[in-house]
Length: 478
Ligand SMILES: [Zn+2]
Image 1 (cartoon, helix red, strand yellow):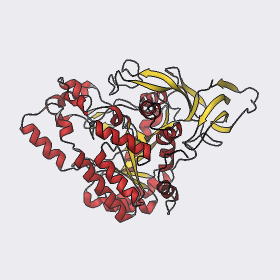
Image 2 (cartoon, helix red, strand yellow):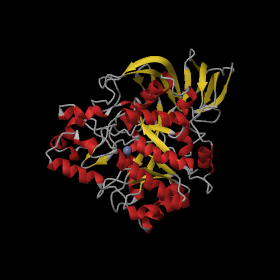
Image 3 (cartoon, rainbow, N blue to C red):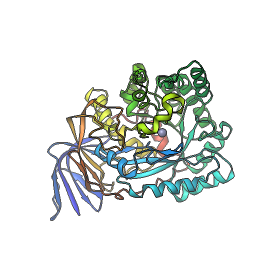
Image 4 (tube, rainbow, N blue to C red):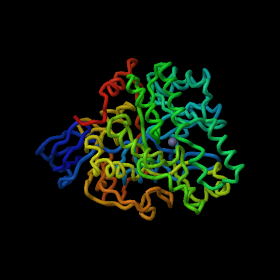
């Protein structure tokens, strides 16, 4: 089947131009003005809308087992939410338990993703380390298309990697040409503060942000950078939520280290005041780690996006229901940590970024798609609109206003952290591999249409990553 999108303003990370796009066999065939229309092709008139590369959200937790329950957005429904917001590819996580085979955890995720409605890939977490883990990291990198390994510096006793093992894992990842990613929080401070607050009688979720201070996030970020520098490993810091942690990343980048940053849509617009709601059930819905922060931290994140210190936006979509939070209502430290956000990430970034004049449309494409494609080595298959790329295309109306409501979103949960917020800039239609899968509020993707996207390891010199560092502000349009 052939498709022609006519009369769009095609926005890539480096350039925008009025053009037609032809698609054949799921890939972009040509991009240019006044292209010939092949006979029998379906013609979509873009009517002057923007055509953007499909969004890439490299941080989701769909259908994830956690503490005897699982996240409620699965790969079918979570994928629908993604498509409805203009995201066509996600990178989720395989997280083995202590002593569990990494390959087994990865295979279980592949199994759960068979009904995916958007394209997907997996980071694999290193939660323990020995010779067999090192061997499995090699199999994942060479045979399964995994080029990024996640390290939890918090959650001691469950998924946190022993700090003594972190350099070993980083060195192994470097040897394989893979990227190290970290959840950076100080592991000792959190339980200490939790116990102290609970002893003082604080059980309400307002205790949650008090036990995840900015200083703890900054401390762990500095330590991860130290380990990365000592081992030569490239580092990607997930969900930077505050100015203090961002300062560490900026300092590392200033020294030329291949250190990259991600921030979340939620952290860009949701204020820490949400934890002060009197009703514990309402406040509990916003519990995630790191927590939502005050205004000066949000300002720092926007500035980081604008100046290129933060390359990527993600959602950390990790959705639970009120029922799953019941046990934690009398003890905030027992609340499951995570919120939805996959559907609205791109709207949040357009509204606060482009509509507010902080980002150009090209920078928006960089931080919602292109930079993630480059950092996780799937560029130029993903992250751009040019010949031979996958035909993942979003028709975007920069002026459309959308008010978020759990009553109309595509997530499996009855709650949104953006409830009632109105964002300017919204997708009109989404194409996945050339198939229209979303239009005007309706998702039509069939379960299983999403493809697994293998991500090859980087070359030994890490050429692509070093280029991103040396370009200073990779998300800046020239
Ligand atoms: Zn996460």
